[in-house]
Image 1 (cartoon, helix red, strand yellow):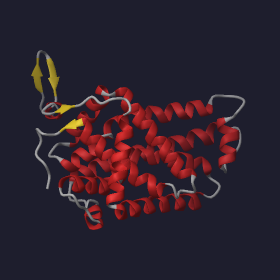
Image 2 (tube, one colour):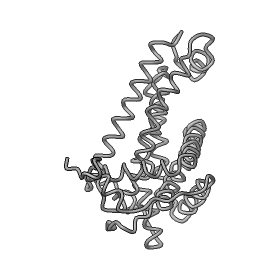
Image 3 (cartoon, rainbow, N blue to C red):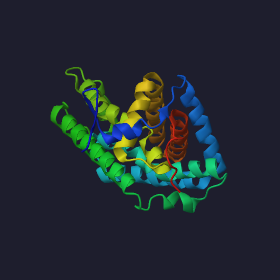
Image 4 (cartoon, helix red, strand yellow):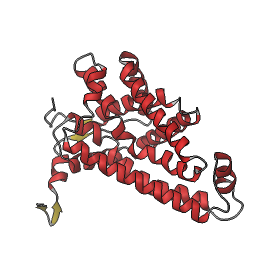
Amino acid sequence: MRVRHTGGMKESPAVIESRRFATRRVPLLRPLGWLAAGWRDFMRCPVPGLLHGLLLAGFGVVLIVAAGDAFWLLTGAFTGFLLVSPILATGLYTVSRALQRQGHADTRMAFAAWAPRDGRLVVFGVLLALAGTGWVMTSASLITAFAGAPVPSPQAFMKVVVLADEGRLFETWLALGGLLAAPVFASSVVAIPLLLDREISVLGAVFTSWRVVMDNPVTLAFWAALIALLTVAGMVLAMLGLVVVVPLLAHASWHAYRDLVDTSGLAELD
């Protein structure tokens, strides 16, 4: 990879590319505004969001049925969902983009975004899928190896893992999940909407995402917590809550990107 020398330091082309435009600092409670804007987009064009939500809720139900009494596997799968969710929302970013630029959008437009024409999005999706798979395997190995008894159900997970009298299995599980989730979130929080919207490399989008996080660490920690809480709430409601939570968070994430990144220095994609 070619690099530029600046005062003895080496900068990659992706870093230089990312610095062609500015990021913005936003107030702590701005994520609530993103949710409000996401809800407005959902109401203006509800069908694509409902279809995405139904598909993901249905996938969750299939996982539950397929796993049977292997709840130790589902814990990793459901938390791993948070890692890959940014790429799953690509079609709804397209809807919000169209509403912003043209004032209207439709279902065809949303699902056309899934066609693998843009290699950058394919690469990013593969990377997120690898991260999610790695976490599922790590979570399953940790619980099966160190739990004091089998974990076939949510009740058993609470008793054997969360409320265990001995050891620190739950704390270790959370810490490992956080160690993986934090860099993935920092790398993807605005990267996929940016790749969908502008001419920029995958690494350039990732560096931009990290710049945004470094400029707004507390605000984006709050945003990450809202995403996790709403997603868990959607899953707890027999997966039906995801029908609304998925489009809400997807549309809100588009507005987070537009609020946090000044893309005036980059060419738009058609």
